[in-house]
Length: 127
Image (tube, one colour):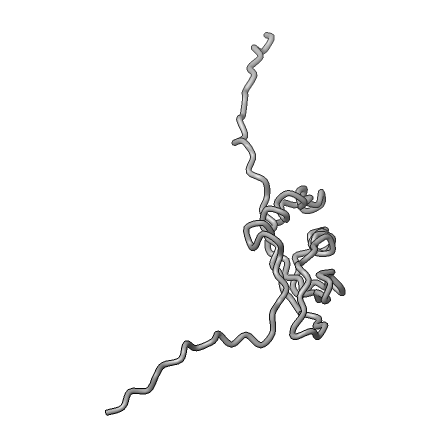
């Protein structure tokens, strides 16, 4: 029996997608650092996830961010502001400029605060 020589298989990657410099952990750190919890959401104690869709051009710039699913109370606007600040690594696919469509979920969680301590002050009633 004749054995076929096995060629090393190349990984097929047709389109390269933009990536955030430093990876996912760096992206999460950027969002944590720059996220400003909206005052209205703090007052109403609103938490949730905002889903944002946007496009990244061949230079790594973000264009046309839009909220796909929001929670309101200023969180949607804050998510759009954050996404507009992002810059990705530029990508070219075989010399062709390609615009990529991306999705991002921004988590709004209320800041953890110290437990509320209740202090009672007693005054004797005057008779």
